[in-house]
Amino acid sequence: HFAAIEAQAGPAERTKSMRWHSDGATGLLHLGITLGGRRKLQIRTNRQQDVPLTAGHMYLSSPFLFEHKVSYALASHGGGPVLALMCRFGYLDEDGAQWVNHMHDKDMLKVATVISGCLKASADRGHLRLPTLSEVEERER
Image 1: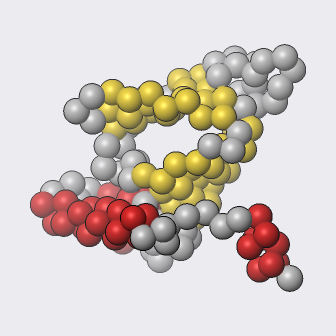
Image 2: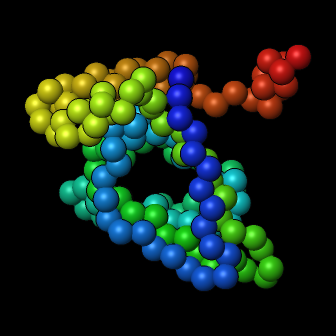
């Protein structure tokens, strides 16, 4: 479960490009959801990848583990700003999060390997998926 959800809005009147960075420890497991507008996620690992994102696009990643940046596109034809939700891990206290933020070592590699292995196994079995609209509506009753 994600404990922290951050709403982000990009400008509608101009383009904006963020700097290259790695997220803090809350980005060890991250679900990005684009609600509106157009943005581009650029990932820099052993090669650069550009991922265009528009309304309805989602991605599950670990931006704590790699450099990336996001560019926000100019709204076209009177469209609104880029709107996105970032769902992340949460920590009970800031000290714990700050301690983990600086762990880019062999111990964190073990943690990342366990997390990615669990995600892969769940996806391979069809257990890692988004709920259908009817499943969400059923839970709301």
